[in-house]
Length: 335
Figure 1: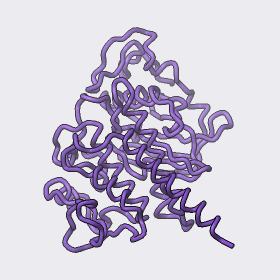
Figure 2: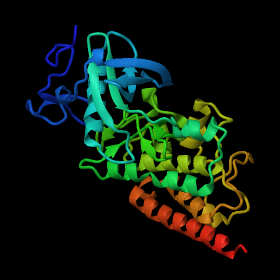
Figure 3: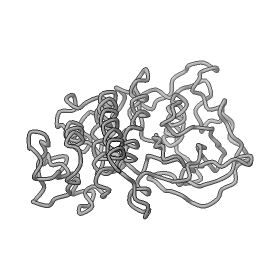
Figure 4: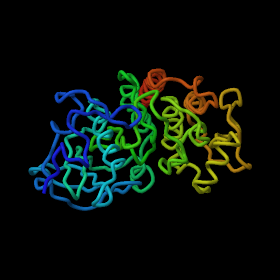
């Protein structure tokens, strides 16, 4: 039996999820209601499992013959809190329309299943692309992938701003043209709403900002810190804090103010990060020092001193233009 929007176990279509997760009446035509994006479960066909998170599993599937990704929440009986989280994620994804944000297509909800349907990106996550594929990515391609932070810039410029709160390479998806799109907004929130902390049991410490690990209030600048880790990951093609477990990361990043290491031979005024027990996770020696500066700025201990995504994009565009010019010069100099 299909769950009706007015079912006592599900938020009414005339209610919207407030920024702190509570429901509030907004009228039947509220743009963030679930009713206007409903997909019938019977029209979905699940294929292979392609990912799994804290509260859901993702399948490659078909919807009326089209390739889609289908995220199915764990369980078959859902608490009121889970139902509110489900609707909040839908409300947020419906607000976002950008080439660098995963396209939301609809949601299916029955008595036994809650699921969210999005476009399917064949290359999978950025994490998989960097760490589990054998195909090498040249520096220009990796810079272009970093430039796809434009999706997060768009999210932060919504009114109110949308904070991802779980930005990491496994939540960034790559399409066939190597475009990167932000996905999995399950922990996202509107700015100034109840903050996400490490105590929630969600999020991945290796990418989380120190203020989040310390269970302090956070804002959109926590996403900027996480982007700095992703940029480090793109430049080194290494897994961040691979030698530590999650609890150790909480300790050294959240409470000992340590960061992933950059090369010792770079100017400390440019790098400005603390080493970790003499263990080096070095950036390539030929990397433009300005990339190290961007990473350092993203990792600033004071969140308000971190750059905005708008600033990051402008700086990345300059780097990419210089990289393209260098390649052009190199080619023209060949006999």
